[in-house]
Amino acid sequence: MERADIPRGRFAPSPSGRIHLGNILCCLLAWLSVRQRGGRVVLRVEDLDTARCPRRYAAQIEEDLRWLGLDWDEGPGAGGPDGPYYQSERTALYQAALERLADMGLVYPCFCTRAELHAASAPHREDGQVVYGGTCRCLTAAEAAERAKVRSPALRLRVPEEEIAFTDGHMGPYRESLAWDCGDFLLRRSDGMFAYQLAVVVDDAAMGVTEVVRGADLLSSTPRQLLLYRLLGLTAPSFIHFPLLLAPDGRRLSKRDVDAGLDSLRGRVTAAEVLGKLAYLAGFNPSAEPRTAEALLADFSWQKVPGEDIRIPAELF
Image: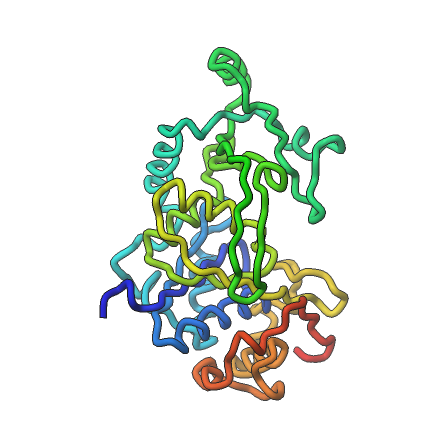
């Protein structure tokens, strides 16, 4: 069977701390979705911000995933044809993609500060994200050169005035007009760090990923990524976004939620208990009984996963 005929999913954690229950649910859903169809799983470590993502955190995440029984076919410790599997070692690929976009006349320098972007007068989306107003879009070469003497610029992509639509595998139809709902977005930050949107597109395409499973908080990123796939002449994967796992009080989980992190959980529950309870919350385990990932394959279905965010009952874990 050719590689193109084999489903390929991925889990791409950012190792800025210990993984929590929301991260584990993401990995479990991605693992089940592709394994159920005889596909392969790629583990990629998204450590572009090396200051916040030291390698020891990545090693801990890899060990946690092994403890959970969520294995991978390609990635750290497993090897594979598409390495390296740490984003911090793949920056030459992002630079090449950036240069291709620049050659098309689609990239320009932006000197706006964070404070200016988040000013009260700046347009914001309903979810609080800033819509870039194009302040630096029409700077002349001379003006940009003069400003660069004072501040290193970020680099932005000129977005077209068109609507980008797709059908999510779980959330259904979604559409955005990038010019109005997002604005020209970052490709590289002023400190030289490549932006998530560019890196994830380059990596998923290079690694042959055919299916991306991730939280609904990243649903609005997809039109930007679809535009980059098109501009770079790359084949986009299918996207499946799932509802977020919330703390008992309704807050979004983060690595600061100690009780939801594996450093706390591993001392009092088994891996099968963690997976069984998460599968119960996600609708495909009839009860909260312990289940291994392998045992959950028979019961998993995206049709059983709810469409709304999931609140963890206070006493479940």
